[in-house]
Amino acid sequence: MASWIDLLGKPDGIRAVYGEDLPTLSSVDLHELSLHRDGPLATLRFDLAEFPRRPPKKWADQGFNVVQVQLSLGGVQRLTVAGWEVNVTLDIEVERRGDVIYLRTLNGPVGVSIEARSLVLSRLSAHRDALTLILRGSDACR
Image (cartoon, rainbow, N blue to C red; front, side, top):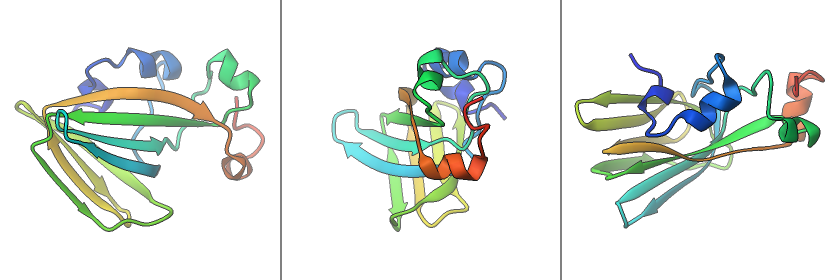
């Protein structure tokens, strides 16, 4: 099965940041799910559980320890959402079957299932999270 990164329209940004140690979509911290009628488009914004071993210099200089990703699915054909909570940690599975991208959440308090035509990494950023720094220890920004 292909990695979620292999299914992206333009994976260069995330490949440049992570190198050979590409992140998974396990234990992501989901912040937002938004829908837009143009496209139609569904966007998920979440923090990855894995920080790059060699982050960009500006991230390291600012003490960032969490990477935030925004995935946009274009040409949405079907979408279901079950539940919503304040703190949402879950796994995301993405696969392609024919011309359709299937995204679904697993193992979490919120259920999301999306069928769409395209998957794009629409934003890649980083921030400093004090709780993550405590949980990972002092080596969070290596």
